Image (cartoon, rainbow, N blue to C red; front, side, top):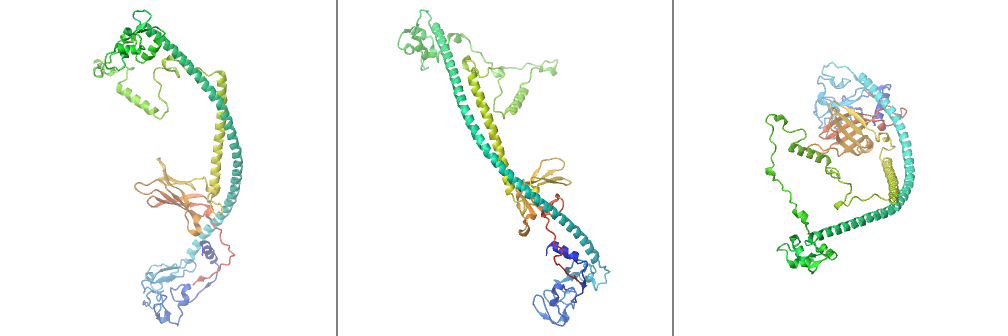
Length: 534
């Protein structure tokens, strides 16, 4: 019998007739047939048969205690409380005549002298009122559930229609992206060729500049080597530059110098070009050789200025920062820029994209090339925008497909909980339940949030699997398992998280009221009838 059927039977029991059925004290109506007066009694466990007058004689004859249902003779016996007007029940036989009223109809204290009042009618009335309220809530909750089912049905149809529309728009976007890809690639090809032509022209220009510089340098070195100004550079004049020694081991010999000269004793400016190609990598200008190299002061000889004894507080002027503080500032700057993909610019300004040897920066693109660049960039922007829109559409399709295929109950009655969250505030924490997503806990007075589990599966019993939600793989406990939560769903008119506890370490239990689990109440005309036991 379901709880709803029992509720209906209890409510119907108010106006039914009461019929007293004779049987030994403490025997339930369901076992009356085993106790026939005047016939031998067989113990309910079948262990032996005794005369009927030994039933309830205050002596235990049966091992199962079934011969003493109305006395305390058998330690393993049980006494049936009829409790007319309320719910029947059983108590251990040891409580019979112990001076304490256990049965609301007082039948357990028939020979103790205890003063007991029959409270069954009043208890039955209160329970029926409570159950009546529960029945009304269940009825209203079930009506709400039907509305939720209809809304979920319409919502599912809308989602499917939206999915179909987005699929159509996705096909259009696919075509648009491919078309814009072709436009982009078509625009990028002449852009690439124009940039390459511009770069090649710049490289050729730099090469010409470098060639002119090399010729000028060669003429300068020729005049520098031609000591006697006779218009020729001789082997003897070349020997004055020992840095041109090929092996750098012995002295620079005449034979080595003549080898650099191409085997001749002297060369004119035209023939000097081949000599210049042999020596320009090692040659050191006499002007540079005469300039003394700067002398570095050893670190140990650097002395800090002595502080003014008359004013120690002004040891460092405002513009002078101690080295240690500078180091700290540099470290702070390093920290601020460590994630950047570029280096901080040097303190001295340098022209943008300036090449070595003062070759200057690459000149701006000519108008024709710039037009091609602008056209290609416009095509890239259009392609990127379309590709972004396509990705967003793909995300929408995946989200819709996930929600459409999600198990939201036999009739999708739990669909209204999807993407919603509900909170419960206790004295210490704020608990947050987001159905089909996650459960979390956050300190009431500040602190980080703790994940108590992510959606796992429906975990109710086989005949009512949608009555329990399981959330798993939450934040791990210190030296313990990952947190998990079990959510028990209860029928109600509202949707609210009403309680939470931690029955086992890192395992949370919560109760959540929702009309989605309300069952259809039984029909009052279903034919349930009965009599009160007396």
